[in-house]
Image 1: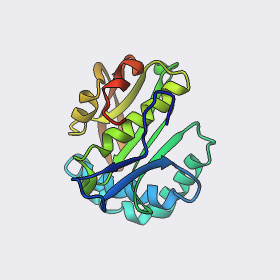
Image 2 (image 1 turned 120 degrees about the vertical axis):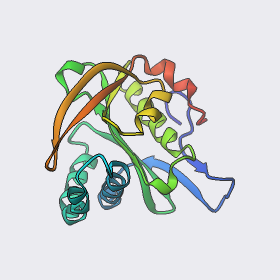
Image 3 (image 1 turned 90 degrees about the vertical axis):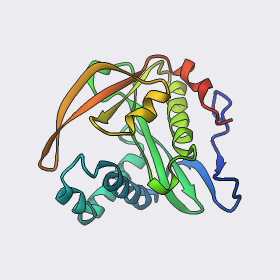
Length: 199
């Protein structure tokens, strides 16, 4: 149970008790599972938004992605991670921490949230987001933000959770593409958290 009384431990999909998803803290040894979700989710989410050749080449960089996750899970980057698991298999994650952008100094940041497509639509993503926002609130952050690729349909997921677009965007380079990211802001985490039906 976190400081807000949310039991972010387990979730059953479709009433089938054999198909349970649990959420736990990320730890050393999870880097391969997180890298797998990261790569597959990018392919599932960004097809049509990013270059197909770039997306198809992600698997070739699996080792580098796993090494990146090893650093994240070590705790040296300021990140806190929660992973969603079906049995021992990681199927999703949320990565949160202090803002990395100077213009958002004093806010928390949802640095990444990805969930395999097969597990979307059952509330697991909301469970991960609620846990991530609760972690930020426990660390003293009153507000938070997330960068979302322009055209990404998951923007609606964040907006339904109470995040608002305030007109801030930036161009970034991914592969050979220059794309636009938009910042969505939760102005008051403590007002948002009670809206999550995860207890």
